Image: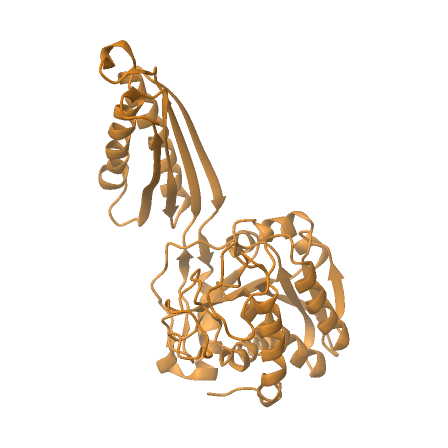
Length: 398
């Protein structure tokens, strides 16, 4: 493994920053303290800092000493999740009901390590923008930063992202051209009937039966309308109806999520859901309110940039530790918005299986969005090295 020695030497200091951020988690668009920590470190290292994009976003501008106008962007997310941490080690969350259960504290720390190195080794041509983004966890902070002028104020030729991945061994990377994470979408179906005594159902219109029919029929979109080779998920995760055993309720509600790797498949599913819902409810004499909300598009890596990232990884950890066609996941990521604007690539860095956790960790698995999770500090020198080498090689690329 070819790690940059200065970053290795800073391991303990960067770990302290990471653990401080972990102990003080902040939710989407509330990352005021985290942004202060990031900005203070960047300024300490002599890096030009711009704040306020997306509300609490921070952008560091690192200019090389050699002449050149090319620029590249490196992005990390800063927000935590609204969930309770069950770990009791020293750096566990001090904010009730908030936790860095997805490793954004580690993502921020890895990019800080890279920023510190680049600030002290400016013998390159061009500009490296280090982008610390708010509100990845459902808030669409990436889009907010773009809408606020991220790529206009800081023009760059490509942008790159990285996420830790539990279950993948420490020292390994994963990447793939094309989709690596799915779109994230929500739906709500409110079936409106006519309440009555359950012993006299003929006097009312039963929305529960319509909801039951819909729950079955909507799955035919996946099994009969979608091309079997196109991955997609349609999950009904909530059904709410009624309040008493002897009452046919006035309405029933179904809620859930749809995940796809392409917008064409997403268009198909949304269209067929609306058609099936409308016609099924009409057949059962019910009115209906159908709502489909698109949150994040699929995260689709550009092929050339994915191949480039894989080459950078191989130079650091060797061929055996790089999976350049890793299996995508149906999880979602708002870095997708950035990849819709610019060429780029999103990669995974192995977080191990939890052996790194200090005494006092919870009994649950060290998985993302789990109360027992903790970022693996052993990744900090590796992630920092990857960011530096990626930026320098991209700027030097013909």
